[in-house]
Image (cartoon, rainbow, N blue to C red):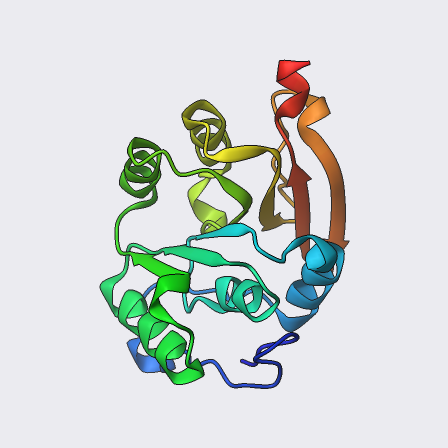
Length: 191
Protein backbone atom coordinates (compact mmCIF):
# COMPACT_ATOMS: atom_id res chain seq x y z
CA UNK A 1 0.00 0.00 0.00
CA UNK A 2 1.23 3.47 -0.86
CA UNK A 3 0.29 7.03 0.01
CA UNK A 4 -1.44 8.39 -3.11
CA UNK A 5 -0.78 12.13 -2.81
CA UNK A 6 0.59 15.00 -0.80
CA UNK A 7 3.71 15.29 1.31
CA UNK A 8 4.21 11.52 1.73
CA UNK A 9 3.18 10.61 -1.83
CA UNK A 10 4.62 7.30 -2.97
CA UNK A 11 5.75 6.24 0.50
CA UNK A 12 4.87 2.68 1.51
CA UNK A 13 2.46 1.92 4.35
CA UNK A 14 3.04 -1.43 5.98
CA UNK A 15 0.15 -3.84 6.35
CA UNK A 16 -0.32 -6.88 8.54
CA UNK A 17 1.14 -10.08 7.04
CA UNK A 18 -1.72 -12.25 5.73
CA UNK A 19 -0.95 -15.05 8.18
CA UNK A 20 -1.41 -12.64 11.11
CA UNK A 21 -4.48 -10.94 9.69
CA UNK A 22 -7.20 -12.85 11.52
CA UNK A 23 -9.58 -9.89 11.26
CA UNK A 24 -11.31 -9.43 7.93
CA UNK A 25 -9.25 -6.42 6.90
CA UNK A 26 -10.48 -4.95 3.66
CA UNK A 27 -8.17 -2.03 2.97
CA UNK A 28 -9.52 0.98 1.14
CA UNK A 29 -8.31 0.64 -2.45
CA UNK A 30 -5.96 3.20 -3.96
CA UNK A 31 -8.67 4.04 -6.50
CA UNK A 32 -11.19 4.89 -3.76
CA UNK A 33 -8.58 6.84 -1.74
CA UNK A 34 -7.47 8.79 -4.78
CA UNK A 35 -11.06 9.63 -5.77
CA UNK A 36 -12.20 10.63 -2.27
CA UNK A 37 -9.13 12.76 -1.62
CA UNK A 38 -9.33 14.47 -4.99
CA UNK A 39 -12.83 15.59 -3.93
CA UNK A 40 -11.64 16.73 -0.48
CA UNK A 41 -8.19 18.00 -1.41
CA UNK A 42 -8.89 21.75 -1.48
CA UNK A 43 -10.66 21.60 1.89
CA UNK A 44 -8.20 19.58 4.01
CA UNK A 45 -5.56 22.13 4.99
CA UNK A 46 -5.68 22.83 8.73
CA UNK A 47 -8.69 20.59 9.46
CA UNK A 48 -9.33 17.75 11.93
CA UNK A 49 -9.86 14.25 10.53
CA UNK A 50 -11.20 11.10 12.21
CA UNK A 51 -10.29 7.73 10.67
CA UNK A 52 -12.86 5.37 12.22
CA UNK A 53 -12.19 1.60 11.86
CA UNK A 54 -8.69 2.65 10.81
CA UNK A 55 -7.10 -0.75 10.07
CA UNK A 56 -3.58 0.11 8.88
CA UNK A 57 -4.29 3.84 9.09
CA UNK A 58 -3.99 4.33 5.33
CA UNK A 59 -6.92 6.78 5.05
CA UNK A 60 -5.88 8.94 7.99
CA UNK A 61 -2.26 8.92 6.79
CA UNK A 62 -3.47 10.06 3.36
CA UNK A 63 -5.31 12.92 5.10
CA UNK A 64 -2.18 13.90 7.04
CA UNK A 65 -0.15 13.75 3.84
CA UNK A 66 -2.58 16.21 2.27
CA UNK A 67 -2.46 18.81 5.04
CA UNK A 68 -4.91 18.05 7.84
CA UNK A 69 -3.62 19.53 11.08
CA UNK A 70 -4.60 16.52 13.18
CA UNK A 71 -5.81 12.99 12.49
CA UNK A 72 -7.33 10.67 15.07
CA UNK A 73 -7.22 6.96 14.32
CA UNK A 74 -9.75 4.65 16.00
CA UNK A 75 -9.07 0.92 15.83
CA UNK A 76 -10.08 -1.84 18.23
CA UNK A 77 -7.38 -4.40 17.31
CA UNK A 78 -4.20 -3.74 19.32
CA UNK A 79 -2.02 -5.25 16.58
CA UNK A 80 -3.33 -2.73 14.08
CA UNK A 81 -2.94 0.13 16.58
CA UNK A 82 0.71 -0.80 16.87
CA UNK A 83 1.00 -0.95 13.07
CA UNK A 84 -0.60 2.51 12.67
CA UNK A 85 1.89 4.00 15.15
CA UNK A 86 4.76 2.26 13.34
CA UNK A 87 3.58 3.60 9.95
CA UNK A 88 3.30 7.14 11.34
CA UNK A 89 6.78 6.96 12.89
CA UNK A 90 8.30 5.57 9.68
CA UNK A 91 6.81 8.49 7.74
CA UNK A 92 8.11 10.98 10.30
CA UNK A 93 4.70 12.43 11.18
CA UNK A 94 5.09 14.62 14.29
CA UNK A 95 3.31 13.12 17.32
CA UNK A 96 1.27 16.28 17.95
CA UNK A 97 -0.45 15.79 14.56
CA UNK A 98 -2.05 12.44 15.40
CA UNK A 99 -3.63 10.29 18.08
CA UNK A 100 -4.27 6.55 17.99
CA UNK A 101 -7.21 5.37 20.11
CA UNK A 102 -7.22 1.63 20.57
CA UNK A 103 -10.84 1.06 21.61
CA UNK A 104 -14.08 -0.32 20.25
CA UNK A 105 -15.73 2.35 18.08
CA UNK A 106 -18.59 2.92 20.56
CA UNK A 107 -16.24 3.59 23.49
CA UNK A 108 -13.95 5.67 21.29
CA UNK A 109 -16.77 7.90 20.00
CA UNK A 110 -18.06 8.42 23.55
CA UNK A 111 -14.53 9.29 24.72
CA UNK A 112 -14.11 11.83 21.92
CA UNK A 113 -17.50 13.39 22.73
CA UNK A 114 -16.64 13.69 26.45
CA UNK A 115 -13.50 15.60 25.45
CA UNK A 116 -15.58 17.93 23.28
CA UNK A 117 -13.88 16.87 20.04
CA UNK A 118 -15.45 18.00 16.76
CA UNK A 119 -14.14 16.93 13.35
CA UNK A 120 -14.25 18.51 9.92
CA UNK A 121 -14.09 15.09 8.27
CA UNK A 122 -14.95 11.64 9.59
CA UNK A 123 -14.12 8.64 7.43
CA UNK A 124 -15.91 5.47 8.54
CA UNK A 125 -15.13 2.13 6.95
CA UNK A 126 -16.77 -0.44 9.25
CA UNK A 127 -16.66 -4.15 8.49
CA UNK A 128 -19.25 -4.65 5.76
CA UNK A 129 -20.77 -7.78 7.28
CA UNK A 130 -21.37 -6.29 10.75
CA UNK A 131 -24.14 -3.84 9.81
CA UNK A 132 -22.72 -0.97 11.92
CA UNK A 133 -23.67 1.83 9.51
CA UNK A 134 -26.89 3.06 11.12
CA UNK A 135 -25.42 2.96 14.62
CA UNK A 136 -22.21 4.74 13.55
CA UNK A 137 -24.11 7.51 11.75
CA UNK A 138 -26.58 8.01 14.58
CA UNK A 139 -23.85 8.07 17.26
CA UNK A 140 -21.77 10.63 15.37
CA UNK A 141 -24.86 12.82 14.86
CA UNK A 142 -26.17 12.44 18.42
CA UNK A 143 -22.77 13.04 20.03
CA UNK A 144 -22.12 16.14 17.91
CA UNK A 145 -18.74 14.94 16.63
CA UNK A 146 -19.10 16.44 13.15
CA UNK A 147 -18.62 20.16 12.54
CA UNK A 148 -21.64 21.99 11.14
CA UNK A 149 -20.00 22.17 7.70
CA UNK A 150 -18.21 18.84 8.10
CA UNK A 151 -18.59 15.65 6.12
CA UNK A 152 -19.08 12.09 7.28
CA UNK A 153 -17.72 9.81 4.58
CA UNK A 154 -18.97 6.22 4.62
CA UNK A 155 -17.29 3.46 2.68
CA UNK A 156 -19.85 0.72 2.13
CA UNK A 157 -20.72 -2.24 -0.10
CA UNK A 158 -22.44 -1.23 -3.34
CA UNK A 159 -24.79 -4.23 -3.09
CA UNK A 160 -26.11 -3.22 0.35
CA UNK A 161 -25.64 0.54 0.84
CA UNK A 162 -26.60 2.56 3.89
CA UNK A 163 -29.89 4.45 3.57
CA UNK A 164 -29.86 7.62 5.73
CA UNK A 165 -32.81 8.42 8.02
CA UNK A 166 -33.05 11.83 6.42
CA UNK A 167 -32.34 12.02 2.67
CA UNK A 168 -31.17 15.63 3.14
CA UNK A 169 -28.10 14.33 4.99
CA UNK A 170 -26.84 12.80 1.76
CA UNK A 171 -24.62 15.28 -0.07
CA UNK A 172 -23.28 12.87 -2.67
CA UNK A 173 -22.91 9.16 -3.38
CA UNK A 174 -20.27 7.67 -5.69
CA UNK A 175 -19.67 4.10 -6.83
CA UNK A 176 -16.23 2.58 -7.36
CA UNK A 177 -16.52 -1.03 -8.51
CA UNK A 178 -18.11 -2.98 -5.64
CA UNK A 179 -17.71 -0.04 -3.24
CA UNK A 180 -20.00 2.93 -2.64
CA UNK A 181 -18.82 6.07 -0.88
CA UNK A 182 -21.47 8.32 0.67
CA UNK A 183 -20.83 11.89 1.81
CA UNK A 184 -23.18 13.02 4.61
CA UNK A 185 -23.72 16.32 6.40
CA UNK A 186 -26.20 16.88 9.22
CA UNK A 187 -26.56 20.68 9.10
CA UNK A 188 -29.94 20.47 7.34
CA UNK A 189 -31.40 19.54 10.77
CA UNK A 190 -30.52 22.96 12.19
CA UNK A 191 -32.01 25.08 9.40
